Image 1 (cartoon, one colour):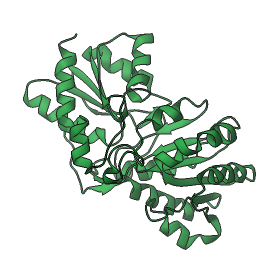
Image 2 (cartoon, one colour; image 1 turned 60 degrees about the vertical axis):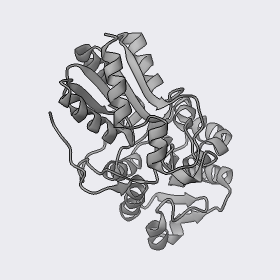
Image 3 (cartoon, one colour; image 1 turned 90 degrees about the vertical axis):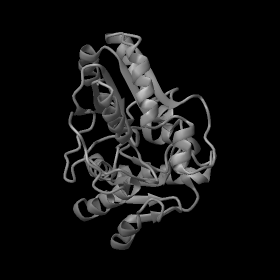
Length: 317
């Protein structure tokens, strides 16, 4: 089976910061707004090199979204930055009314998503943001898997007309995708061929899916792995093609199984090709304080959990 190498663990939020820095040099219409978390969002370089295009709004996330929506009217491409919890739940009304309903070209960039921001605990973690954002008409939802892909996604969404939710994380994770990759919104990436089970994963769980595929291979189980970096619009065709071959599927995400990638995949299967499915995700719960490793283990969001789910779903074929 095809294998992938971690070229050096890096945080996906730095991929966003470096992508934004590059955009600052190449696209004069790109502006950045931050809600008092410049260092956490890695927006320092953009602020230093383009102070006239950077706006520190303080702890006023709702105002930030409304300012960004207004800036689009003048042709600017605003990138907003704060934690995922504050990027979505705290400002949902403003996003719905001023961005999504109005179809404004705002890029909502959210760090510290999921459980892996760790010790900050449940009040800062968010496991329902994908569901919140994918339900908004016209909203594109992107959840890249590593530093390189996050950088490429950040650059790509500047050329996409319409609102985007870009989700990334705090911890250092495996960096394994190509450095100068082309990021195509809405196009799933086929990573590993397999015949016994399909594993579709998003975000930090993509590397765990690859590790699970190796473990399954050692058990004589052939797993196909697909990287779903764009949750909306979802690549229905890639999913249908894969399950037609394998006959069962596991979805893996750092998100609640209610409203996330797994439910989107279930819709595709129910309306096109009913197929046994297992969910690797949190089960209708908030998180808690702990290291990222401890939390991913406790809530079953790792390669071992994916292996277990794959073995279970194969028995259901």
